[in-house]
Image (cartoon, rainbow, N blue to C red; front, side):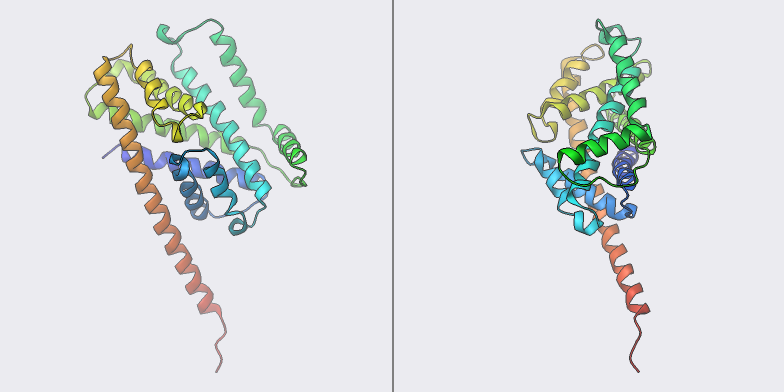
Length: 269
């Protein structure tokens, strides 16, 4: 039950990251609306085919007062920040554990660190957006901000995700205090490998296979299978709760907005 708190925080911060990227592109939208749209689009990842999440958010472009090209651009930037922050953080957390070292690892980590620093710079973000709009043959936004706030919230979201997964594993009694840092890195790396696989909806099955393999140095196969299965089920429960909460909050916000407009409308005497 305690794990639900960082689980909800993870999804909220992921939605906040996307909202910050919209602001970077000149689109102003309240956090509740962004959270509602982002969460609904994320849930459809369980439908085979990775296009549904993209199409789901692009279909809401009119509601956000933005073009579909702008929404698509925000999702490309989001994917870049997602990969860089998750990969960089997992690499840092697994540093010092000989089970996860390989030749050239230090160089790869430096490349990820440099790429992360470069991407969050305002001139680089502007160049990326202009290049993408040029490829899509659409005019680029005139004012483009820095992606540093979005990168920061994305990184914090991964810390919340790792905390959520650690609490779930702790509930199964298979986590020792000395392995917390390494296990946090393992959970992040397995999520990213599932995300990059493109073989299953929401990385279903692929992520769990990587997680079981990466948990090998810390626990037996039966315990690793239990952690992978319970972690996935717990994540799906949190997704349902967050989706329901986002829908209720958005509906309440719309009702309050409608009442405000009605109260401001002049009445005929």
